[in-house]
Image 1 (cartoon, rainbow, N blue to C red):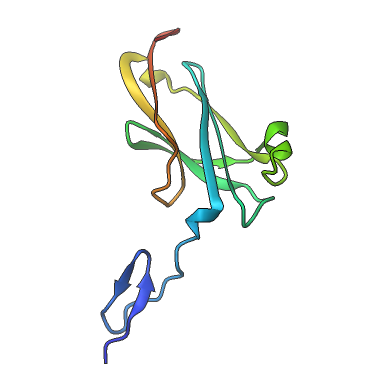
Image 2 (spheres, helix red, strand yellow):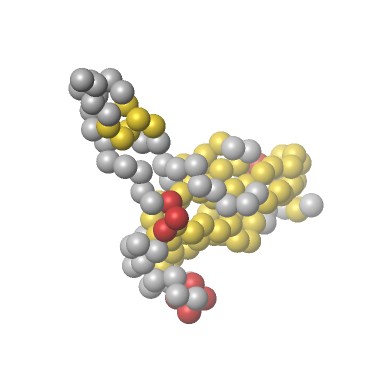
Length: 130
């Protein structure tokens, strides 16, 4: 008899495949991309199921991850809005290599998932923003 086990987002129908925990309940996550300018990228994310724990996010530029970032900076507005202890934001310097005069798409997402914020477009040349 073939055993069925939940592996990520699909079923493994091969007998003896390794067991993996189900993915996190994505409905408990919120993520938002805030201010994006030629100096910094601001945003926040949190897990309602773990309201006082920082989570790992990823900033994407043109669908390429800049790498993981911990959303652990305090913002009073987040705490007042009921987002746990308010320590769920990040600020990332805008990468110099992207100040190339081309328009870029910026998003933030929950690390290890497909969940992402809405896209913001920005075009920077040196110290200018369009």
